[in-house]
Length: 208
Image 1 (tube, rainbow, N blue to C red):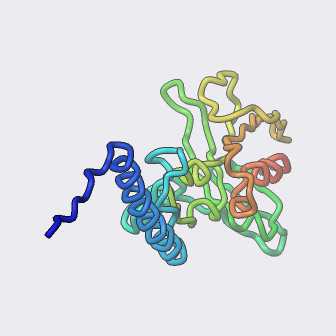
Image 2 (tube, rainbow, N blue to C red):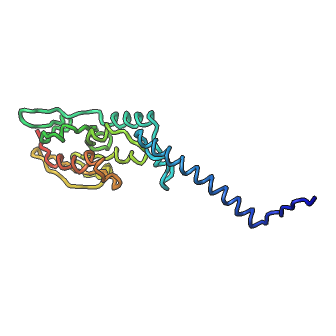
Image 3 (cartoon, rainbow, N blue to C red):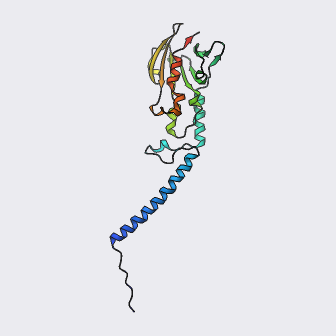
């Protein structure tokens, strides 16, 4: 009885077999990984893939989202006072008022009195920024956009952002307006928090 002889596979054949096995594994991982990513995003999270931007674009955990939001709210710890009869929005520490509109009602601010070489300063943003929850760390600069007002200051080193214009008040004081923006935040999602909207209101400031 003759024995059936099976030839030893060539090196080329072994390489081909290994390649096919690796390709099959990659296909399976991609198939299930893509569906896990879809389910993850459908639950309000960012992509599981970093899209080439590294750690910054990774999803933010729920705890971190609220820590960031709390930190933002603590920065802007004052709300303007409204006068519906005269249609005015008052920032009393700075003794100025703005027109009362649906958007100006959303403003929140931080006031820094002059002292120790630091000029009197207002930092103003919209509650659209302080109330937002980031999905990834890439969203954080979009929450940090604001307008800065230096009051009667010749020293521009304390300005935060790009200079916009000077406003002369009736009482003789000068307001220097700056906006701090991010080009990555131009989508409709972030439009309500745009510092340009805040600046347009500050340009209408009046003293009292």
